[in-house]
Image (cartoon, helix red, strand yellow):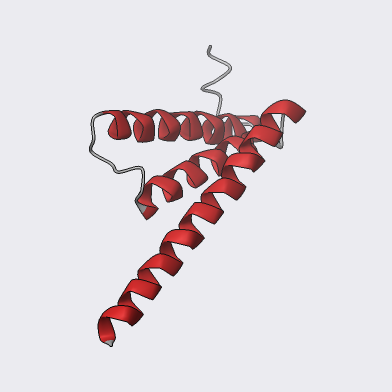
Length: 98
């Protein structure tokens, strides 16, 4: 455990990124469960994408193919979710101007 807190090596920063990604996943899911966050919001997809990116960063140091594929899937899905919601907001704004 003391090895985890050794910030003198680059390994610690990769581990920190992974732990922050884990914390982000847990916080987002908790907020979703407690209805503090709506699953249809851009923020939900942005937070999940950030969490997946942090975990993927940590995987770049200690690679695991299955975990990396899952994180890439979440990132792609998050970007699609954000893009769709931005386009819908843009379309709604354009229709309301008419």
